[in-house]
Length: 287
Image 1 (cartoon, rainbow, N blue to C red):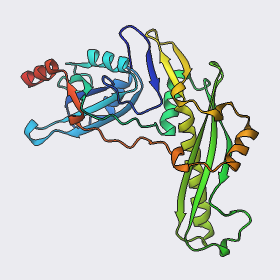
Image 2 (image 1 turned 45 degrees about the vertical axis):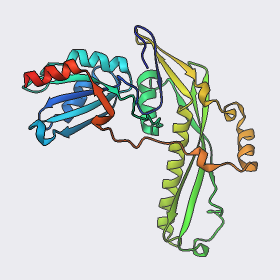
Image 3 (image 1 turned 90 degrees about the horizontal axis):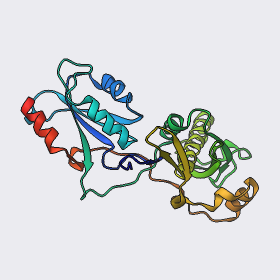
Image 4 (image 1 turned 180 degrees about the horizontal axis):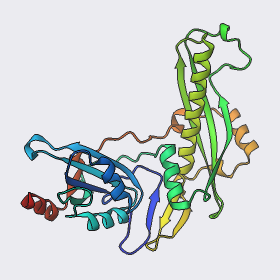
């Protein structure tokens, strides 16, 4: 969240704080791509979602534009409100504020979104990741068992540990991820190989996202970025050697449900927000 004139703290979570989203209305049809391009000039966007107006509001479209940074959202609102930008009629733009009665759910960013956020603020060379282990925990050995000896329906489960390193900031974090899927025909080699690859990939993505949850970006008003370890996510696995970590996982009965973070799967509704009444009134009078 941004402080007036101070640093803004960003985590690798779905933006859910007040001030990070904009309501844009008065849109013409087919404006989504232009809208994304125009607002991207002010900072990294999490999402742009365009909706058709309700019947009582008349023809046209509105959009929810969500930034990671509330400071960027504020700059975009000031610059774009009542401007034509990419269409004939001017846009109306106001900052959304979370309703106090709305119960906020904190969701982890998916791995590809984590990479986007890290690349934007840290640079492509500002971070790296490596897979420490990718282990089959399905209860059977895929390499040594004959496929013909497997039952027709079998569940695959993999556990992965990924390490994320920020060399310029001296920070190193690790994340664990578990993924599973069922193979309907365990005797079909092609289906078995494809499902195994998909499960392994998903476990890696979940572990990468979990590692990023332990990192906080401190964005200063001048654009410079500092990084801190998120003490609320402190985890003893970050201080273990690779061998110690592998041994810990092998000898401990880990609660796999605890390893699965609540990842982004959200839909925003206008009822979740309140808006600047002055801008709304101004928009109605100009229509």
